[in-house]
Length: 365
Image (cartoon, rainbow, N blue to C red; front, side):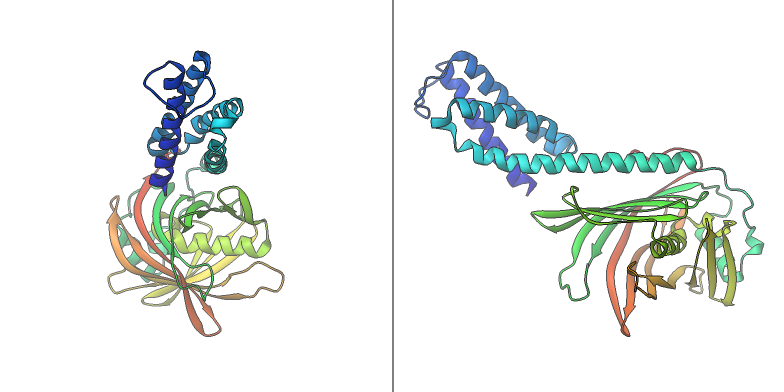
């Protein structure tokens, strides 16, 4: 779709170049019946340049192409009004470009909000204190902690890149493709997750989940502009977000020693973790294999946050563990809900990269 859009803009740009050539008598052209003054030709050339710059930015800096694109549209439409008899059909292309440019602007604002929220989380993080020792952990948790290779590595925050396939409802046949990234801090416990979902070549969604100061937030927008879901500081969402944070400590194992967590052994391969923070509490069961690798997490968790919602079983299963940035973490996972005795797997996730920080630095993403 990006290629087709770039071709459309390029063809539109070449038509504007024609206005410049006609104005300066370069070549023999019959495309315009109205006389074109040289000063107008200069503006036709400027519009051509702006459109070409837009195409270049689409491929090199997609978050900013709409700036040049918006200026090109304004100049182009002014010229079209001046030469309406010959150029009126260019309005159709400008209208298409305007819709896409507005989407680009919305995505830019969404990304700016993401950066501001992550910066706020980053500034709140502090050096963890009162961490449990490995000997304080139940045997299966201690074995997992050692198996990760993180034992003597002080980590305060993590940045995880993800490739995702997801379904939004149980009867959905086709998987949607998505890219996501997530930022975690150990103390205070917080996460910030963003995702871009491709519904089809013409429709996309941007989402942002956040857990901060004991409160969860969920935001989903079509085209990064039209709100579909916006929920914050809901008691059920707060607990659900805390449980998600708890489950995802498998990507930054240092959090297993957090003073906000208490562990209870179940058997030699599993343990229950209970997390309490800012008056919100939630728990779940971690299961490990004989080598100490994480293989499963389950919890009773809210899928929905409306008044009548009840917690149901939420399951994360790891299919593959791999060493990333020196630490063994699960990199292929599936996420499911148990609904009416059936298991609905709604998300399949691949971790494509992890960065760890022990100081207050935010990855440039």
